[in-house]
Length: 452
Image 1 (cartoon, rainbow, N blue to C red):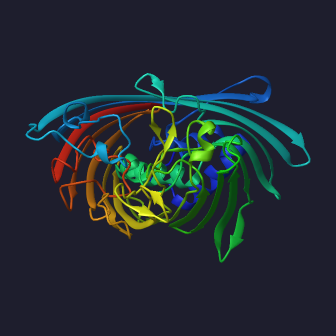
Image 2: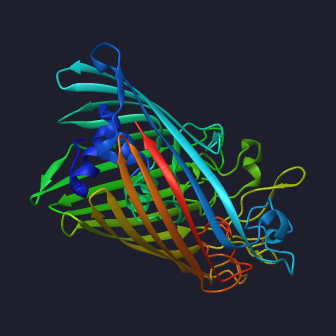
Image 3: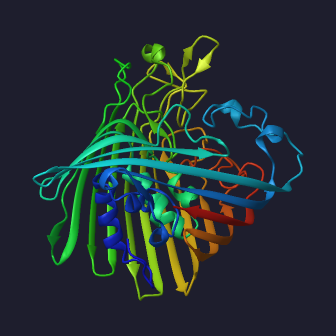
């Protein structure tokens, strides 16, 4: 990507990034996959014959101070439990709220190898891993480990470990650019990591004077589950015309881990296939539309709507101990058709808006995310009556040569003091501000990123 004096035209960036991930344009792949916000200054290291191999990456550090803190280790009676088990709900009464400083760092590397096969065919292999606070982000799983075959007319076929589009584009560029990367991409009914995936990406079509890309991804998950067989399907369509970029994504899954954590791995319904016979079928899906509009060379506007659906999953002692499965939206004291602790289906709608303004090397941004109430027949309260409104402000300074600095702040307001909205993976997932002990909180911080 060439340096530009204005914000990238969003549809051009998204289309090129989709192809870059499989055709060896590592700079574009890095920008699409990681929330760097400085794609025009990233330069991959190329080596080997004809630049066959490439290495690039990034590092990030932030320091954040948030108020209204009541850490789970001291406030929650059972701090390590899944939020959908009822004994994880209770907090110790009378605990004081406090401010807390937190340090965060992450790094990611990509190693690529590409080869021109001739007659328009090219192959590309990618290996990538992410570390957070000095540890693998998802222990035991690669961020990317895949091989792709591409042709300008026939499209791209990719096989292996890869990221879902639903998380990828929610995280960057959409969420990162307006300070909502984790709050938007890390919530909802989607999944992030795929481990046995096959993906087909079409070539770029010229439709109605715009660019259209179509894509389908399938993953069979952990093959050791013979009764509750996993299945993942994701469809992505991108259309860009002029200064408008429109991305439409749909995930439909069966027997992944029941969750509302948009950064989860799709593998199987439980971590041990020995529990297969104790588990019930479950499924979830997410439909997402994101739009970005370049109002002028300085101002960019964005908006998104996400629809979540969960089937629910009943609670069961999956292994001796007992070690419970991963239930979702359960009625602990009820039963349905003789099945105790049933899980109920639920749907919710989330929305987001954002704006960015660029002034020389400075970029100022604000974002709003609304995590809505859920519709469900569950007679027990599991957070379906709650909602959350999150607002962020940030300013970034592009120092140059891949280095940028940022100042940021934000606040969250819950509709109710109680369990968090159903589309949040925990009651305190946004900067540790727990909906069970406070209805509102805020934070501010500083950070630095470097990419090569």
